[in-house]
View 1 (spheres, protein in one colour):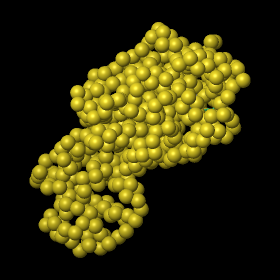
View 2 (view 1 turned 60 degrees about the vertical axis):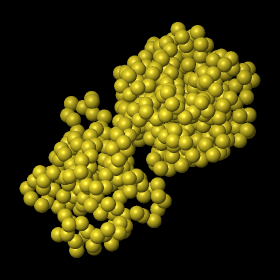
View 3 (view 1 turned 120 degrees about the horizontal axis):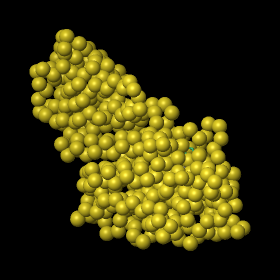
View 4 (view 1 turned 30 degrees about the vertical axis):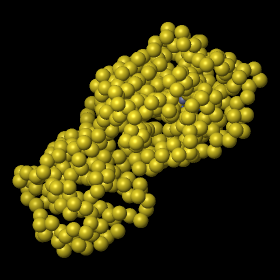
Length: 483
Ligand code: BES
Ligand code: ZN
Ligand code: ZN
């Protein structure tokens, strides 16, 4: 990941410079750019963002980046800057640049605009190449921001922390189960907590048996690796909230479907079924790195979902952590079983709000595609709207689902308190209703099945794990911590 460095002056020796110009800025063209004056004037009139490359001598390469506010929504404009950031990085990588200098001579960039370009450059630099004998080429090591109009150092530090956390979440998703089973995930969480400052308690199988988490144990029955239940905490001395915010992440390190085994093309990519857990871990990293004055707890129930001699079979009835009995009619609807235990565990904290993130249903993915996430829940509309607003700004958008009582009726079982599947339709909502049964506090469920893992690179979201949720939750919690 490139480092961000802030200094007033661009050194004479700088080989790779990017002048960022805002076509909407009022200022006149600065003296360094006088020689391009006429050319620039015509380019500025164009409707589009532009990257213009000039070679001024053997070693001196200048890129002019012209930014133009579009007629689209503000959030779409901000996101177009992130995408422009990736293109800029690629241009410099092609030049084999190591140190690049960015400056905004017309001072027409606001801090959020500037940070978005940098965010795109950093997130777009991500590569999961640890298993490639031949590494991809990435050359830019340092991004120097110079001139009078620079984002504040604290903002640059925060941006680095959030990008780092997003990339760690991507790494966790991209790591296959052969090297990241549940106990290994537990050890990773402890390591990451030590690095950024949150504390971790990993409950092992014996603890989970003692806590009677029958959902997590049931899903784990087909596995040869034990489950874990991770509790992460960031509790600064002067937190703004009396009761904690709790984040819960689905940590299915691999979902074969169990005895209802996934067929055809449905199984590959299921290493990403711990994308919710990765989002929670990444958020805990970002919140603790940035030392947000807010008390946050992260819960991750984790296991793989496999076939095995003792694996759950359809018809089994299990007893959850809170005593609810569940008739398991489909072993592939396992996420709700492990999350139900975590959600009832959360009750003891009397939380201000609980947000769970889960790659829970194909039905949610069918609704949103990879362009956003479906959400629902019992939290106040104001809270939902604030979360939605964070989603727009970081461009991890949220679409609210209907959450009618009738969906709950579809979970009635003849032999137990609940069954783990609903009818043939409304799958994202019946899954949500199943989870709601285990809550008694304001709660939001985000189904990230659509955006957690993508097949093809889209701008600063590289093919593979996207780290979705980290930037969303960080932005939301930050907005809560300044109030
Ligand atoms: N992990 C899957 C959901 C999923 C599907 C995530 C596609 C990402 C991409 C989940 O455990 C699952 O298998 N859900 C079933 C539920 C059904 C059996 C009620 C589904 O959505 O088909
Ligand atoms: Zn499943
Ligand atoms: Zn799953």
